[in-house]
Length: 275
Length: 194
Image (tube, rainbow over all chains, first blue to last red; front, side, top):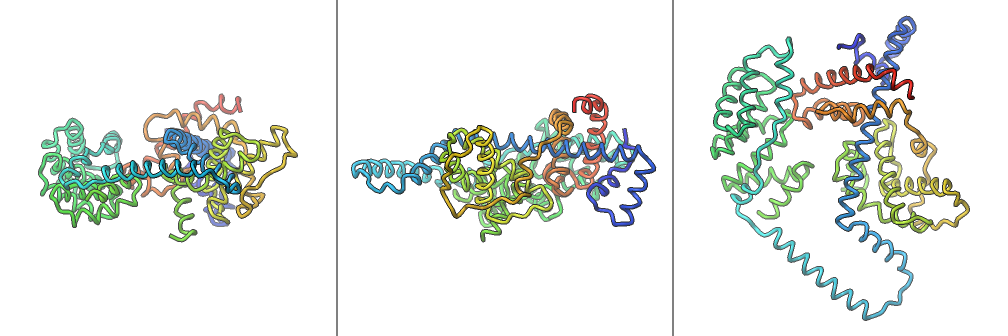
C-alpha cells in the first residue's frame, strides 16, 4: 500500500531540511491535519527503530570479530603485552629465562619467516588467475523481477525478459547461451541502466568459457564507465583477465587500486605479493 | 597518513560498518583499555565486554551529525571504556576504590555531550520496531539501515547492493513503505507493550 503522505516531505521536515517558510507551512499543515501529525510521529518512530536495528547489527558484527580474534589468540597476546607494561618497572630478570625466551622467539621468527616465504612464493599469472577466479554472484535478478512485475517502470519489457533469461542461463552455468542473450539485451536496450551490468556478467561468462580476448573487450568497456555502481567488480575481473593473458603490466595497476577496496583488499594484496 | 587523516579514515569506515576497521580498533586501543579495567578491579572478561560496549558507543556517536572527534580515536575509546567501567564499578557498589590511571597522557575528559549517549536508553517501541526489521528476509533490512542509519547516498547503496542508482532510489521507497505497513499492522502490540 502506498503511503498517503509523501515520505520525502516528512523526512525533509524531520531532518530540518526545509527553509523557514516551508517549515512554518508544514507546521501549520500538521496542526490542521492531525492525521498528518500522527503520521510524522509514526514515521520518526520507524526511523528510530531502523537505527536501533542498525546498532544491533553492528553489535553482532563486533561480537563476530571479537570471537574471531579470540580464536586467533589476540587477547592472550594483549594480556602478555599488558603484563609486560605492568612489570616494566621490575628490571631484574633471570638471564636463563631471557635466553630461553630468545631461543623461543628465534624459533617463532623462523616459523613465521618460513610461512611468509611459503605463503608468498611466486606463482605464474595463470595459476593466480585459476586460484582467484570464481563466478560473480547474481545481484541483478531481484531488480529485474521487480521491474517486470510493475507497470510504468521501464518500458522495455521485452528487453527485460531477455536479460532475465540471460541471468537464468548464467545462474545455471549455461554461459554460452547467456552470452548470446546478454548481447541481444545490449542491442535492445543500449540506454538502460542494466546494460552495464549485462556487459559485466557477459564478460565474466566469456572469461569462464575461455574466450579471453572477447572478455577483455567487454570488461574494458564497462570498467571505463566510472559511474557504474559495480565498477570495482569490473576492475577485479579485468585484472584477472590480464593475469590470464599473462599481462602483468596491465594487471598490476588494477590490483594496486583494488588493494584499497575492502572487498578485494586481501586478495589483491596477496596476488601482488606473489607476482 | 597523518593522524587526522587516519582518524577520519577510521571514522568513515566505522560509519559504514566495515569489519576490518573493527579489527584495527582492537589493535590500536584494546591493550590500553584492558589495562585500565584490569588495574581497577576488573577481570579479563570485563575488559573484553566493556571494550565491545565502547565500540558500540563510538559507532552510535559517529552517526550523530554534530559529532566531532576532539582527540585521537585511541584516546577517545580509552575515555569511553573508562567511563563505562567507572559507572559499572559504581553499580557494583565498589565506589571509593583507588583508581590507577595507567597512562596519564590519555587522561581525556569526556564532555557532558560525550557521556549523554551512554546514558541514553532506547525506547521500547523502537526496540520492538527494530526486532521486526531484523526478522525481515531479503535485502530490505540492509537497504533501510544503509539509508537511515549509515546515511549512505543512493549511489553508494547501488554500488554496495549491485543495483542501478535509479533502482536503489525506488527500492528504498518500496522497502520503507512496505516496512511501515508491517509496523502499522503490529501497531497496537508495539504501542501497548511500550
